[in-house]
Length: 137
Image (cartoon, rainbow, N blue to C red):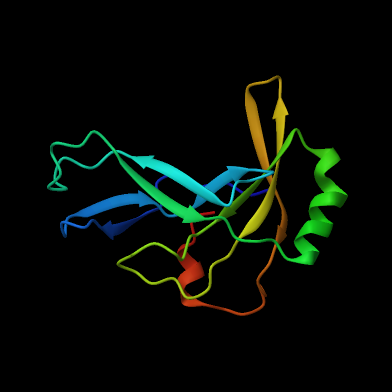
């Protein structure tokens, strides 16, 4: 089982130079569009008092052949499927060298509780990287 850490955020710089916190991990249901848009409400200290929200866009990673195979094998076991990833195509303060996209199966219980299961990741998890000691899921 996996759990998304909603408190895991990162900071991007807006065109005006102000910093805005956005979710570290993006997620979307499958089948997914090519680009996902997140609406982010700026902090009071962001220097953007006149905006109620910002839109941050990121490309959805294309699954590998093996990821598609895992999706086809396991999709009937879950109520829905999602892809979770850390976008690398945003202007960020901290550069993420190895994005770690994964397919997640969602099982619902009584229509209220949701449990998330890792179905497939398409990086080599045997490679240790200091960044993943603080990953968001």
